[in-house]
Length: 259
Image 1 (spheres, rainbow, N blue to C red):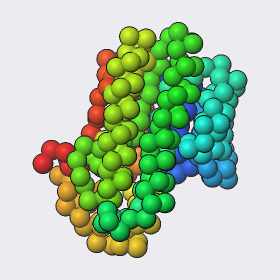
Image 2: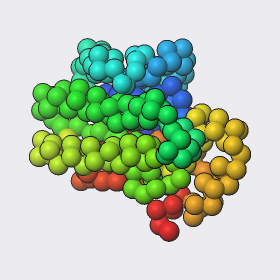
Image 3: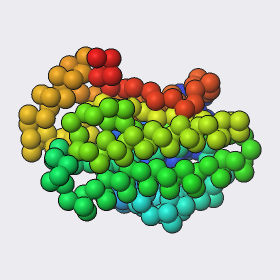
């Protein structure tokens, strides 16, 4: 989906997007590029990243793929270094990579599932912050970071318990980083995302169709989100119009948090 180009908003800035191979991450990458940003694409699926970079180029944007896993510090460091080496800076980041599984009672959940949920969702954001913040500090002109959280980061949603715990941790990391670096003009916010039609969610809905009914029932708008609807808020938070926002848990959830 292309939303047209407005290069004035983020022109000349460099943005790193994780989880960029599909869903919210891919939608955000295209929108960042449409707003004039140079985009560093990070995800595990190299073929998807190459296809996305080519699509962005065809739309008049600039993107470079950096295949990698957010749970591996060296991969994250390589992505950050690529931003600086290729474009001269890292001005914003959308730490969007995440992983979860279908609802399973806590006492039935395997240890390896717990480990992976915590590793991708918490350690992944931790690794990103650990490598993004020093570059922004060294540049001396601040920056903006958005971490994808979830409504599960504020209340139990029916998701598996480790996912709820992980997203609470992401919100905690977001607020702690915002408090630590606010006086250096690095803004850090979290998106509290409702159920969105991503590749992972669509797969879950095919396997257990009744999940959609429950998700729709919780939303005031009585529907699921499109990835582009989440992406627009992430891009806005990284832009100049959100300059006085940091440490915020921004709900993009169709009204789930209102009831």
